[in-house]
Length: 225
Image (tube, rainbow, N blue to C red; front, top):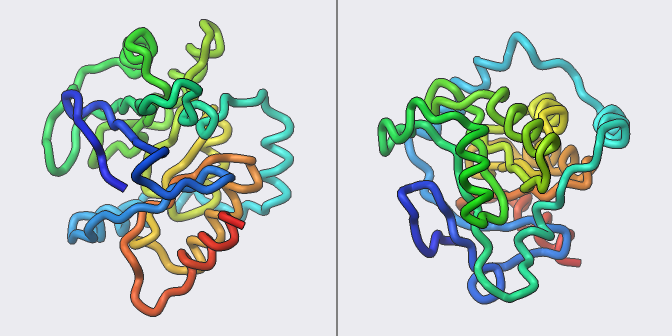
């Protein structure tokens, strides 16, 4: 999958109709290069969450999902009825590659600006160390949308390694998560994939092919069938 155009490093335009494989349950597979920085970030993320994670069962995730208010569908928002490109607008204060982008930006105000600009969905960075985001950014955006509809579906953009992070995302009002296949063990991919499905969520699988790993292809066959 590729970005078709950038708007100040904030927008991603995704052409699902012509260029990309898009499954019936809303998973997108696309390729990105694996870099040393990603290895560093993933190692830090595992360390960062080590003291807070706990076992999370699929039943617990399903019960949580059913107990909370419904969230807007990310997949439906991307399937525009007019056939035009869907726009995912991103709230990101900084990045390892670009450096400072908008360090003082308010997540809620940026979200409202994107809604006014007719974005279809939002991607909210919740990694603090490398991207300057927090889980509270996502919380504040979804709370604001709930108080002042219409709500845009939000993706929690972070480095997911454990289903506890999926639970956190659902509690924060997320409609989707990002799974970076190339940076995870096969069993971690399965666990996160199953956790997201239990939420009836859309989840993006961002991948570079893993040598001798059958997991992405098996998932694709299952999802497209």
